[in-house]
Length: 137
Image 1 (cartoon, rainbow, N blue to C red):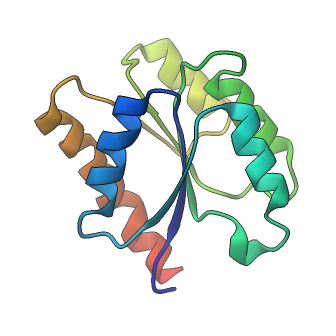
Image 2: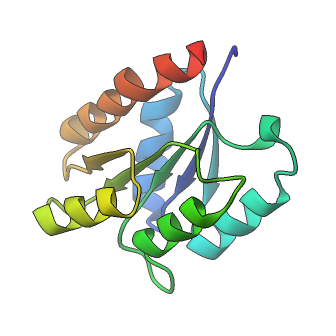
């Protein structure tokens, strides 16, 4: 696989912009952005073959209408989506949110930082941990 594809699910335009900048620099990842759980699930339903599905989903925890845990439950319940790695990318550093995310089937949990340098490091963690493995897969 030459490039991996990532589905970013986040309702905060500023966080989306920073995430896109950090992920696209040097990774070659193709990123699709959705701004709600419903939009993400609709997009995944339209991916009618495995090659069109994302290799990784970055999922915000705190979103209106459908939160990250509800989206994660829907992903894990779907035959076509249950095996896609999901990393929670959220501002919450609460232990209970981390535990809940893993209990609902998250593969990873990364806390968004409030300054650019720390945010870049958080996304570098994702690139180091997930993108090389996906390219080899």
